[in-house]
Image (tube, rainbow, N blue to C red):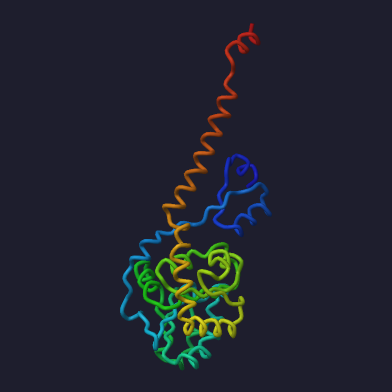
Length: 255
């Protein structure tokens, strides 16, 4: 890849983690500009009545590949029984494609408290995130950003995420949402309990997130990308001008 990369005048990485990967393996550097999200689309979306929770019956969502271990469904599944002991009216809405037979069998005795929605459309995803009280991101690794977290925050859902560095950055160290120890189902259940009972804490995070997500909106991101392109274009123009032969010098060399 290196010969091709040498021709690139500027690189963009979506996060510090993505930038570090580029620098460590390929050298050079990259400017960090995050992934863009149409935040207003999520902020203005209408929830679906069947997914809207209440104080006594809160709804908690998971969205991801069900049979991909690093997406962390098993971590959430292990936390479910403890959460339901403390909040018996809670409902877990699990969306995503893939074979989840083992997890389904493990949680089957909880009945309608755990619902598998299967793969859902973009429209349904927007409605889901706009309906639920909490969105859980229990990934165990391999994440450089966390775009669904931004979508959930934009939709007004409370977010609980594993404390991967990428998620810590997106959640501003816990100011936009809650963090739990990666892979620790017991700690996840404690944090879910805290989020469901700490109304003031959730409200504070929601207010902070409403402002923080603006830096991921496409209006902001597009302006930053255009600045990079403008810088490259201006640098190329200067380089082309400096290489243009001076007529007098050219005549002197070719007499």
